[in-house]
Length: 410
Image 1: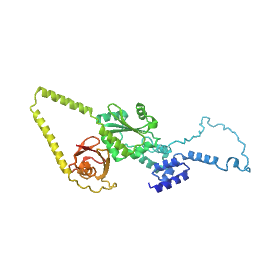
Image 2: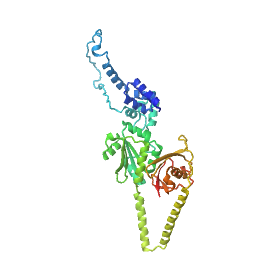
Image 3: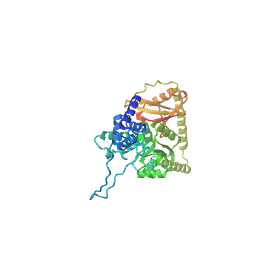
Image 4: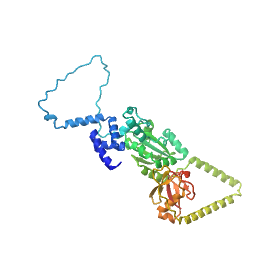
């Protein structure tokens, strides 16, 4: 949205609705600065109370009120008190609603338009607001395709079985930052790819029973919501956490750093491997295996071959191919890859999904001068595995769309 349109929409919204700058900005940001949609949303979310309060204040501050009233105005009629006979005496008298000046009106509007399961609220099913509610529903929809379907205990068990970290997000539907996470962060392609590859993602609202249990378990105060935490699936310990809205690029950086610094071992697989190794050692003790020497020799030969490959790789690094022009972001056959260098800097570039995997090595050597004379390896952030960049396979064949990679010196 251009600054000119933003500058025009803000005073127009304030003139139409009579709101202050903060409230007007919230509604305009909620609808991407669409003046018509923001005004409709304001009117649908109960603007009558706020408008009435404003009118009362304007009337009280008017120069024609109080002692300035004309003396010719006749006195008011005497008050009368009457009682209806035969009416239902159990009815509830209407109560005057007080308006909290510190309320988050934008978040309450989203919460009113979108129910906890992501569907449109019945209060917003009128003909005039149907399209607006549908747009909000799509814009702030929770990431159902990424979220684990089950309880917190089931999500933790699934993470333990899959040897993945447990990523938990607790939201408060009346806090606009929660809806911003759904709109901007969880919908980001790089975030989704990183979370799906290394985490079991579990999301819940504070108002739900499961959400309150998790908040009580980890002593998460409602004022700190939304909450994002990485939890160890076996111990249940919170290893990293963030509060409030976290931008997609920042979350990718934080999660990537965490995955590089922490390795989650599969205990079931590890126990199986240890058992097999123990049985093998017992077998070798009972019967001296004549093939043991041959296996050791083969291992040494494989290691020598790997060192030879590194030497050949260093020779290839002396010649740097030129990178093709970076493709447009609007092309559906384009993906975005982020690479973190050893010094902590990050490089992001778009590639065609059909580009050969060797283009990643060319990209690193072109942008990192030290990589031209020093052997390096590219590794996934999660699972932490080296990538062979010497082949001609396409990036899509290696499932590297929206990948987050790291450069490690060899």
